[in-house]
Length: 368
Image (tube, rainbow, N blue to C red; front, side):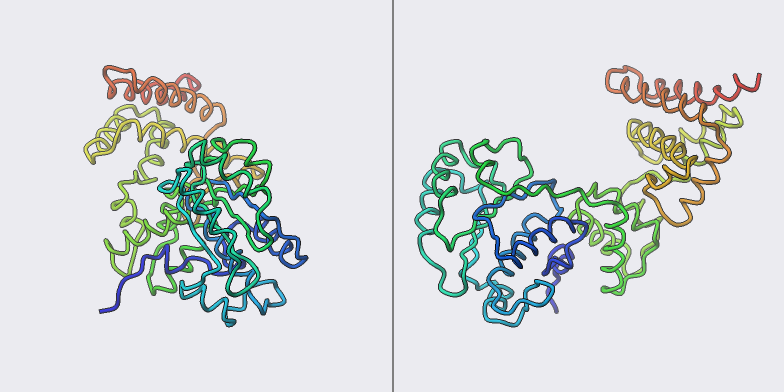
């Protein structure tokens, strides 16, 4: 039986071209390699799962490649590339600063830095979660970071740039990685699904991308989880069931009832939501987001801010056309106030029900 490899590892980018949504950073690194203007220290910052360590590995492989392509990518055929791809390269050293954060660990590293590479031009030291180093370890690292041997390049990666002392920051070229957008994550998941012969509905991919919160690794982990749940055919319903996400349909139905001033049906829908096990706080924040999405749909300029696709986007457009901006603004205000009061409320259900009744009465006041 073939060993299963999680998608986050199987589809990890192996060239600058395959890195998702970090074009400005990959282009800068490629230009630096092309013009042979390599710094001795780089700092890659950004949220989890956006490609910091991946880009560090690709960069390390590319600068040691002996036969670069015209597009400044590693050839994957020379001895340096093949040894890297099979995890037997002695030119690339990875250190986890979370578990190697003492002065002694850094002294061992500085002793190792003096040894020139056996093959290729550079020894690359990738230090992950560098903010976890102790202050003494940072100080021990300073001199080596400022004046390393010509063959040594340091790539520091961190999710918490603010914890790194200024003297370290001043010695590095700093690259800030972006959170990956919903559209980019959805597109990459679609590619992975096709590669794995998995049929999946576009709305389902969109929900996974939103749930991942800008992290491609999280999105791929969620995708694997849902494939285990649903098999080779994934529907939108499978995704929201497995992830315990509240269906868009509830919010569309609620707004329709708000516009009709139908308090009774609004209360029944909310009761149904609670009976399905959804948290009231999660519901009210989702309702606020729904009002916000309807508002951005009312203007062709801001519709690009709507991070949904397919048929659901059309439903948003249709419902936005049936609502007035004043109603949406007032409804957002009521829902947001309810959100802020939720944690301190003694009767959380009543708090949300009062908010829903007030929203339902907004159009009643206007019509009277």
